[in-house]
Image (tube, rainbow, N blue to C red; front, top):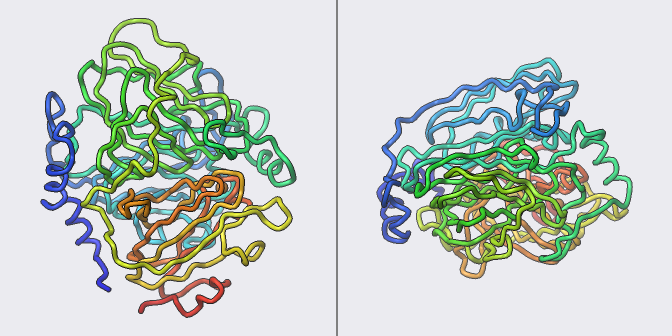
Length: 493
Ligand SMILES: [Cu+2]
């Protein structure tokens, strides 16, 4: 089987083939009518950033909290680089425990992936680590700590990889980072983990879609680090087209997002282009990203992110004219309008992995035998050490996830962007996919980035309690059990 090299993929993304496909298949309206002209070509630019992981005091708008983060604000510094450019990030660990940084969604060298105990030794308190990698693919990503419950503090930030030949026409960007907040409110994420570990906890049911979307009734839900009582206000001009880059950095909350008075045209899932589809609202799971184009109306509008099943919301304001801002509790009819589904999403032809047959691997999202832990394995592998799914370089693997529990599990694979199969076989490219209760979702992965990679639920509390496997191919697999009956599959050939 031919192994597409990175230059081949890049040529598909940046070359005339990808642009032609967009011009032929996408609505011309997205490609530069009105004021939203195609953007000028960018020179490839590198970026350097210093991330000081440390105890900090941050202002959430309506209150100040003591937490752990990368700056005295949350989210941490926004990182921007051009595809093909290099990110150099010096991590100083001034926390009282180990830490790492994971570059969520990026197809980079495994030694830079920030997976503690798998691809790097966690950075000890007082130590420094230099992350350095080339950002291969344009899109909306984020970075976060991959140690303990640090993600559910302030150890995260947005990461945007710009396309040097951006095919979308838009005038401005609004990065919208969503989060669920508990730290420094009289309790903290480690206390929450202990509650979840040690027995029955309050669980929040999704009234519309069934099952349980999360465990924790958080005191606050944030847009760009602000509570609904003191929201961020994004000011623009009517008629302009903006690109929303939606990122769910929450640990235990799926959000239902809508912008009052506007439709949402979804253009990208987890950084990769889809055939544009217009809806009123979308659900974004932990670790997922969506890019959305919006043509701005005249007025003052609520951006809401309803915490699924939790009877609370994150909130921000979009202002294009004078007038009174809506209250955080304002009714937003779009929340009950057309909801984006996985079946609505069709991959853009430029990033379609195609139809090559794949070897199937069935995986089960389940509970530990004692009923407290969470597992990702074969049905026979519950309660065993983390499963390793062995693959061969160049192989295409179809991972089929079946959720046997009553909770939602957004499953994330490091170092790759898989393709959701769906009914048409032309589903979206993603690195994180929501698997709802009693549902099965199949994704195809092309093994083109050798290494040992984490495969886990992006509900932080589930991965901390065992819903974690590895996906590996390379020279030196780590010690540990391979998937039963599949040993000998690893390594080239
Ligand atoms: Cu989960």
